View 1 (cartoon, rainbow, N blue to C red):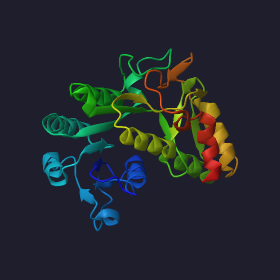
View 2 (view 1 turned 90 degrees about the vertical axis):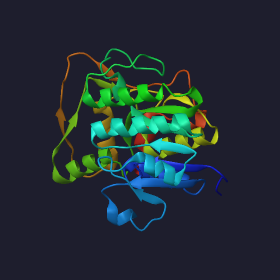
View 3 (view 1 turned 90 degrees about the horizontal axis):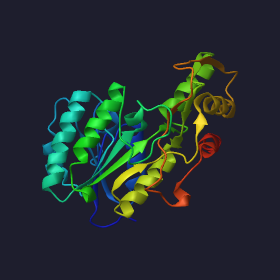
View 4 (view 1 turned 135 degrees about the vertical axis):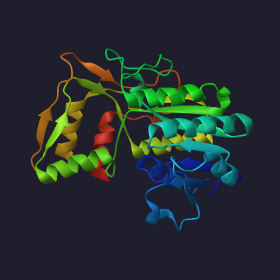
Length: 275
């Protein structure tokens, strides 16, 4: 049953996460989304708009849809992403619109000795992490109630790109890279979609860390996932980027979700069997 009056626009709705969120929300809200390269799948769908970061003006799209809430799951050229979010922030500042931005644990990838919490200072050594920080900083200048930053760890799920890579490697007998000294937390796309739905229903704002409440070594996680998938004998390539343990984990502390929306890394692994 749709909630009357709430119109949502998902930027990047043809990507893995964007499309999963669209499918979660479309039966409850007046939901629209954008696509770029996957033209055949979406061009006949009146809820999807073609939007090319490099060519199209996001203002035109926003004026056409007039959303109450924008969810950004955009991918693509980094410079174009920055420009699009700058224009988006200007539009949100002038109009009665809220936004949720899918960010990343990589905004903390320069810190390696501890997991990171919502209000820790961001610092990144990677180009990707610095991109997310730059967009986050734009959004943090908006009125607090207009903006939500959702920082995600590695996302898994039966149809996720990461699990497909593991399946392909198992089928081909190719090595699967594991990082024995990397300590992470994770999430599943199904739980992420439920969490986003909850945040929208409750009009939540601020910074949220949407990862599992516990931590796991990357190699232990991938080995257990490969065993659960049961597709031949896995071959692992151990990659050491440091001699010490390195953390890349976003743990919630200040903005906690209800217990039924939290998860453990073991639940992410177990979901691979159910699907």
